[in-house]
Image (cartoon, rainbow, N blue to C red; front, side):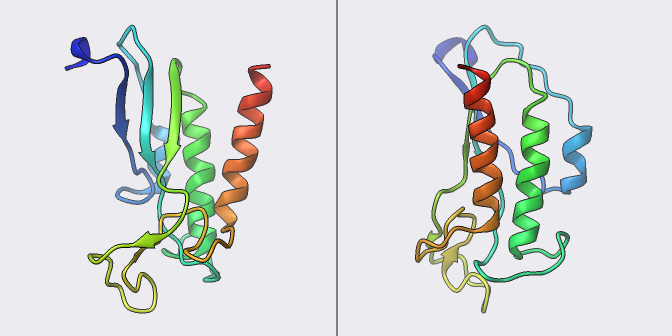
Amino acid sequence: MNEYVDVVSFNQYIGWYRDVNDAPKMEWEIPYDKPVIISEFGGGAKYGLHGDKNQRWTEEFQENLYRENCAMLDKIDGLAGTTPWILKDFRSPRRVLNGIQDYYNRKGLFSDEGQKKKAFYVLKEWYEKASSNHE
C-alpha cells in the first residue's frame, strides 16, 4: 500500500492495549521514503480520578502513559508527526463502564467539560520542546 499513498500512518496504543512497560523496549524502523505519522496514540482517564500511575483510568495512569510514549516516539528516526487520540472526551454509546466512562470515550486530554487532565501538560511540554528543536 505504501507505494500508492503520499503519507504513511498507523495507530499505536502502547500502554493502553498493551503494557506501558513495552514502550522503552520498542524498536521502530521506517523503511519508506515518504513521511510517516502516528495517527493515533494515547489512553484514557476520567478527569478528577487520581491514584497510582499503574491504576487504570486515573489521571496519573494517563500522564505516565503519555510520558512513556513520548520518550519512545523521540527515538523513532524519521517520524514526521503524531496525533494524540484525542483532544477532548466525547460521547460514545459503546463506552458503558459505569462510573468511569458513562457513555464517553475518556481518552481526551480535556474532559468533556473542558478541564485539562494531567496528560495535557505532558503533551504541551513535549510539543513545545519539539517546536523549539526545529527553530
